[in-house]
Image 1 (cartoon, rainbow, N blue to C red):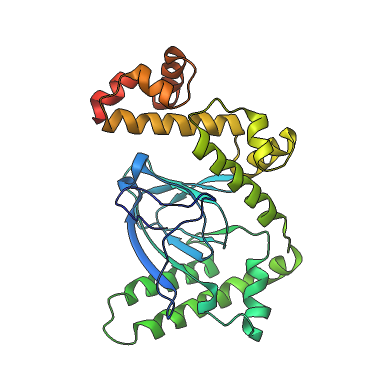
Image 2: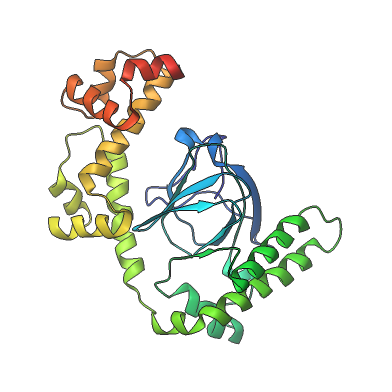
Length: 297
């Protein structure tokens, strides 16, 4: 995860995060972020080729990873697998040190270590794992993560410390979950996620138009039923529900940053009538668009 412009994640048309994490010689990056600082206190839907580990230092994270929604309290951690679409939100200031790195940092793709210990994890359908401090091997991983965070202040041998800690983390991860990874390998996660990304990007590009379910499904070359199922499995909401939510987010941003009339914002964001827009907006944000502008302009 990363904030590339001070307020939000920047993604391409497939929702892949654009920023490069680390450098080619050492593809690893440490971030210390407060989710509260992001637009709408949310790190929006995105994915990346890299692996991510998160630790909740303070506050509480509302996690949406694929079809799963859950809260992550302070003191707990999270592993997010490569190419796994996710969104993180907070209801109050929430500090989350986190690391994002290429699996190739641990071993080259042609090596025995990669083929035997790393690839089975990456190609499994285990999209994420939560680490809780009262489970012993989880506690050990959380301690090692904090060693990685502390290593950022080292003047010497920082990279060696990071590699040593990451290798120990992976040994614990694979050692405790190896049989699950080996038994549950699948390509379905990547296939469905690709279609979900296509349809979400279509919504992002055409939210101002009067698009409907069949148009969203046609863009990914799937049936309407399949479209519904992919959204349900991927983010636990329907395509139209996601479309409306995205329109409301765009409208909220315009209310914050422009003096456009509510009727003009309604039309620009794809709502067929201003009264309908106002009802939907209040249902989600708890206040009317005008009240929202007064509070945030």
